[in-house]
Each structure stands twice: as C-alpha cells, then as structure tokens.
Image (cartoon, rainbow, N blue to C red; front, side):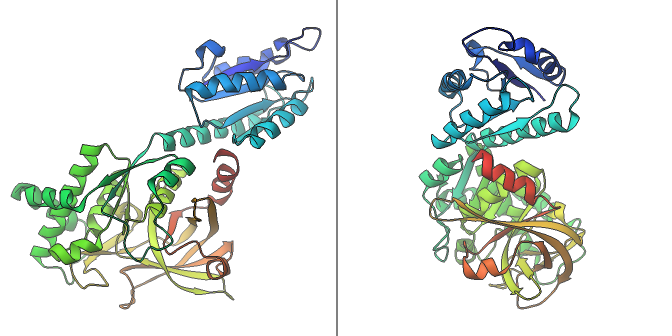
Length: 411
C-alpha cells in the first residue's frame, strides 16, 4: 500500500518538541509503503497521513491541511498520535476543529513501531480514505429516469455528488434502444450461451426471450464502455413496455464484471451497492424487503436479478411482476450477511444490520431469488418506524462495524 506521511512539528524548538521523537515510527511507516513528503509534495494523489509529533502542532496542522485540500478536496484527515510529548491532546483538539469545519477524519493511536495492532488500524484507515477518494472519482450512469414509484429514492444528481461524491451521467432510454437495435447476431448467440451455460434449467423463457435479454446486456455493456461508468442504474420496467423484455440479466452480468448495477433507476441503492463493494470487496445484492417479523427479528428479501457470482446455482425464470423476459432464480449460500439502506433527503441517513441467511425460498408470489435473514445485530422494526425507502442492499459476511466506522469518520 503506497501512502504519504508528513511529520507535524510545532514552530518552536526545544527538547521533546521536534520530529526526533517520532523517528522510529516514521521509519516503520516507510517500511510499510509510506513516503515522506513536505507541503511541496501535496499534489501527489496517494492518501496522506499526518504524524502528530508533539503538542503545540494544532495550528501547523490546520495550515498543512489547507494546503492539501487545494489538491485533494474532500479527502478525510488521518492523524497518527503516539503516547508521548502531548501528541494525543494535540490530535484531539485539532480534529475537533476540523470536524467543526465539516472536514471528516479520524485519529489512529499508535504506541510505537512495534504496535502491530495500531499499525494495522492505520493501514485500515488509509484503505478507507482510498475508498472515499474513489467515490469522488466515480461515474454512475442513470439510464432513463428513476421509476415513478421511487418517491423517496430519486435524489438530484447534485445531492449524490455533494454527499457521496459520484458524478451522475444521464443517459436517455432512446440511446439504449438504439444500442439494442445495433447488436449483431453473433453477439446475441454468444450472450445466450453465457446466460444459459451455467444455469440448472430454464422454466418460462423461450429462445426468443433469451435472445432479447442478450441484446439488452450487450447494449448496456456498450453504454458502460462509452461513458466510462463505474456503476449504473436502469429504468428497467420501460423495457417491458417497449420490447417485452427485461434488464435483469444485464444488471447481473455487469455487477459480476465489477460495474455495480441497480434496477429501476434507484440511484440511492446503486450508490449503496458501490460503497459496500468498494469497502468490503463483496458483491452486493439489491432486493425488496418482502416480509418481516418484528418479534423474531427476521427479514425476507427477494428480487429477480442478482450477480451470479454470489450464487451456488441458478435457473432461468420469467420476470415475476410481468411474466416476461428472463429473471434469475438463484440459491444464495446460507451464512452471515450484512444489510443496509441509505436514505434521507440528502442521502445522509443509514440503516445497517447484520444477520444470517437461514433459508432460501421459491414462493411463486415473490420475485425469483429469495432469502430469509435472521438479524443478530440491528432491528427490522426500524424499517417500519423510520423507513428510508424500499430497496435493501445485502452483502455476504459481517461488515457492519467497518461500514459504520467509515460512515462516522469518512463521509
């Protein structure tokens, strides 16, 4: 991991008031990928760590941070404090001021060059900063408008940019339609093979249905390449009206390929998918909360699209609501999961919980892929009392503590 560090020393000298007190710590940072820089090197985009050598450094740090923000606006501040020389008191004071000014950040307490736990925490903080800066550089495509029923999940592009960082690229449905019409027969044949090759069966879809979704998949891939997108959300139900087909497989294939893809033009959930993926490396699933039990603290999720990389097996079904096109009925492995929902007028709220997938379903009155989750941390009652919107994002594994820590200190 390459990162930058700079020692923060006070303007006055004297015993115990210079960078010699952190010489061994800086040497250890260098052995772990750190490169020392002065303010003249602050244009380097690598994450920057401030090592608070002593007390009396608060104003110096503010001046350094002002210089850094010219080149890396929005970068969270990471301060390294150590046990001696009033390093920690200075760090507490200056981070309090930065937070008053709306600058996010965190203090990492490292006892010395042999403090493996502290240094591991520092490396995790640097990785978290990297995720924040990647979000600021991200491009999210919105193909069509958000679906009409997403009355609480249709933020302006400016809100997405100002709160979370990504730039929203508006793409018309007419452009997608033109791309669909331009897909070659050979591409369709290869797409059908990809779609059906690993499935355990095909129930309702016809060969024509498979060809249609292969065209949609190729067209969406072309838009992703044209606009250099990191994530995308599609007003997919319009395809049911215009072409009697679905985007379910296209969104599945894109997510498997590393382009986080959400349905129904839901930018909020797509940003949630992107964030969860960047922070944990896990593939995300965007799904409907179809049923819950407050007493048992259980939640049923269901949707007709999911990244096949999350599944043990899958078969091809029709899209549930319409009976048209191709949906994915997949079996997720049982085990630990994290579920989340971003919301609020400024996308400033978060619901977060952990649990276990305890069962998979095949009910015919729900979207095709279904799981029952028993929460172990968090409450499904929150969804009833203070809902943030419809779709829930799920990732495998227990990551709530990491997500919450990032949310508190990096946004």
